[in-house]
Image 1 (cartoon, helix red, strand yellow):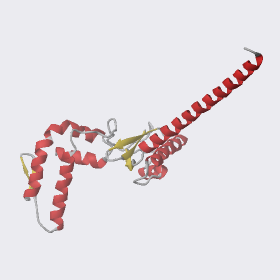
Image 2 (cartoon, one colour):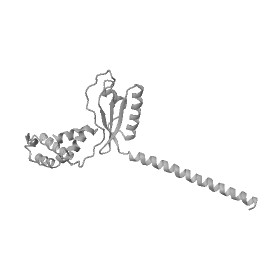
Image 3 (cartoon, helix red, strand yellow):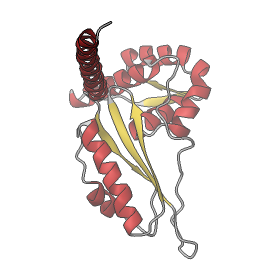
Image 4 (cartoon, one colour):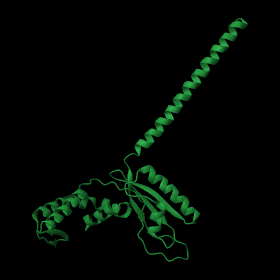
Length: 218
């Protein structure tokens, strides 16, 4: 191959190499943007549902809420930034704390904060959650039935229709037949879910869900 042809070949090879590198770089850039978009979209619709704080002599709940600076319904990314900021603020104050974001049902996220007390402080007794997380159960129907029962009883009260409850074999029954039909449905489902409901009480960050689980077991 002549010297002239070699130079032409090198020029074309160099151009092809640069073109290939540009294409690869463009593909990588698009891939990164796509990944970021997917990550952001995946968190869309998730919003702040509340703060679970176990209390400490070092920090009141009011102080913690002010430091966190979140309103109910705040979007996920805002919650994440607030949690990061809270970490930094507590570190500056030399307060040892565990801060977690716990996803719950229906696109909600709770912030769970556990502040360690100093060795000399006398803390108020609190019940901490065991392995905080949203607890999935076999069926959400018992919770829905309980809501339906509460709605029925509230409606009777609003309409001025008197009702009362009695205990039969450890179960609550009512003077309203429609309410008793709901109780009958609960009796069929709750016993088989007892262990799951106990886990909800001990681990789920949603206080309303824990309360409902306790009512179902009672």
